[in-house]
Length: 140
Image (cartoon, rainbow, N blue to C red; front, side, top):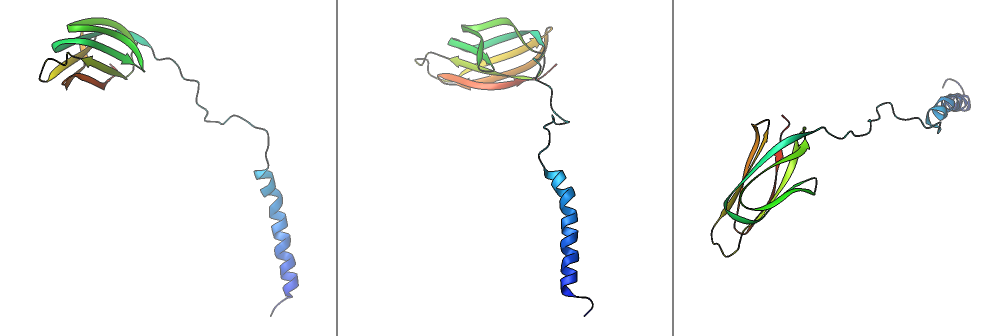
């Protein structure tokens, strides 16, 4: 055997103590600084004038459109058109339609979304008494 085991133990403990100082400096709580990759606060998306055309197979007793859980349009009847201010970026529209339950058979509602008279989205939904669904309107 070479060297004393106690001497080897003392050297190993000394190396651990030397490594303790930089390790303590790395892990000690320092001043809190904002992260380098912090995201900026969200910006409201730009809004543009958007035309909506709604057509039903039978006159609806209730028609409604919602954006982010807030009603943006409501009405009734077989056909309707409206101009709404909606985001220029892609968004989801919630469609609700209800028909008189005395009318048997399937009912349909078609929603067309246009910007500058160019079609942006077109969706059809089918149901018996009511429809409650969402569809994605892409950015133009």
